[in-house]
Length: 346
Image (cartoon, rainbow, N blue to C red):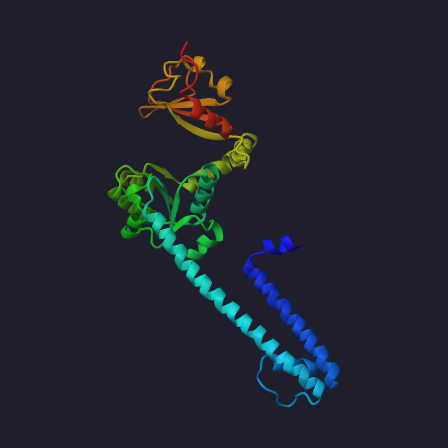
């Protein structure tokens, strides 16, 4: 029991102690005044509150010697508890204020040294799903969220996640987010105009940054692409297609969705870059036998901007290829680590 008590946060331990002590003191005082002064319960409670709060006696006061001795003990005890409670309350507000300032300063320091991170602009319903997906799929990703409402962030993201409270369309805010050193930016605001502006601004700060942009209108997709977005996603189109497919091909659609959304990550899409030293370079897909060696399935090869879907078994793997594979997350990670240690081409 003592160990359980120590596991409680010290702030809550103090609050529990204060409440318990106050209840015990009030109960003892009420019983004492009823016994020594012969008062009713209400009058005894009234005298107890007056004594503890040290506001003086008026219409009711101790008349017996025993009652006065009892009041002499009760008054300093009550004053001590009241003082302790006020001190604890003041300490709580001061600690909250100081800890918040320290937290903000520490976060600003972390942001000032960020590099290779991903910036998420906005935090509406779409951006929240983006954040959850990135958090679940890649635990070691450095994420930075820009949003104009801190309360929205407090309800959804973990305290340690970096954030900037401000307007994501403001250039200085994007500078503070170190977009010029970021790996990628996701702009998911509900306004296409804002997403176009953020894309243009981010590209002006960092020409090499990858930008994924949300589009609400069909004609905005081309504009965002010309503005510099690497990929443009229209949630309405994707949602509409999925709704239609759920009626036309419900079994297949439900199966794919269940696998993708599974928390066990039994199925996911992975991308593996083949460097010059990868041992399977020069091998055919049949020789590499990724299914047997690593229990993953090769579905496509991205080669010099050309996507080869469902490649033939005699297709040779080349340096610089990006392999699109599906399978268990651990299996994909094992292949990513060991692709340079595979069998030499036959």
